[in-house]
Image (cartoon, rainbow, N blue to C red):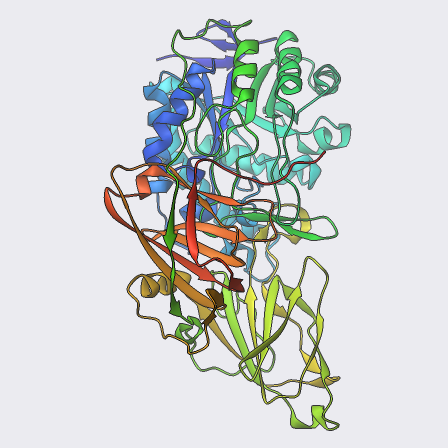
Length: 592
């Protein structure tokens, strides 16, 4: 059994100074059949450790239904890291941020009335205790002092920027130790004096998160922690993207110089991200700092390994730096090869809105997604419009308190406009009619600060021409069921759903293609509006003409030798009724 500990100036492995050179890979963002490949490429870059968050909402999307299999098999992931001869760092939160849906918190948790997140609130801590005990059942036997490879475990995540509940941090430490975690514990905060003061807790080693000015950041960290190893536990080598923005990149040589400065100072490092992966399905988060900005499906992060696991220019630049401090393996990963290019005609299978399900209840005002226990992306709201609202026959203004997060408004079956939270829109002039239908999309739950856990849907009591609209129904949409029905052509066709090759949404489309071998693919979404894509039943995630992302990564393990099927669930309209697969990723224009 090996021993990993904290010394006067260094981490110690069996009593000898040891530098942690780590990279982040989130197992829940990478297909399990690709874990080993990504981990191996980390070792070939010179890393000796892999770090991962643990996403509570991936493991327990519904209260009491714990899942640690398949994509959620944390034990298998840690074992894959060990098989490559590498150490592991585990960061179970319970809050992780990570640009991940709801910051990692399950929606059922944040929906508990009166709960006070990230505090010593007994209601919150009771749920956290159950969660962490499950995680540590997996982690504890894999610690280095028990013959495993886990060397560090983190308490909370950048807590100093959020709160100052010292009792909360102490309870997390006690819970962690009581669950059998014996390796050193860490916290992480940006090296800002107030953040460090709020985020540090006795007996736990503090680390920093930053991407530049290493000397200054380490000095600040050292001023709060006079002894022990210096570590940047999140060395930001790139950034994330949001819909409507640009694709964020950093110069690889500038990033490499910053890494060199960090290592030259004797510090340990965890590169965030080494390999970002993908926000498959509906797992993307959102930011809200005055404006709601949902995050794109790709989590490429401009990392050393791109979204498809291929080495980038940044990989080689950082590898050259690491070679100054450690002996590199003789082997190096192969360069990327082009993916197959071909087009697949898409056939419309009809309007899927009819398949939305509801229990027939009528609500005085539109219920939130949470009120009807819906954890999907779409809900259809409907109500009769008061006849006296159109007494003069002129259009009237439909107004809602807030839409979270995007809505398509139809009157008597005819679409008349949209409302967007990102654009602060909550009112729309609509023509005279008898019935209003509002399709609302939850575009991603905020993963940072005070908007975590907020309700989704139509918020407040809608009015038309100033008059209240009573008696609403709400029908949740099961996207998986829609995709399965479209794959089997079970949706109702619409007489006017397409014209001149253009398909007006909402509509589902399907196409088939053949492959001679399983292979990575890049699906080009240009010519499409806004919606969701599936390949062989696997939920790739969201696409949107708003950009910047233009291609969706299809991992090889979800493809098949022989016949394959793609399904597109379109919310707006498709001008190009074809699925075009291209040679490589296109994540959008970068900032000048």
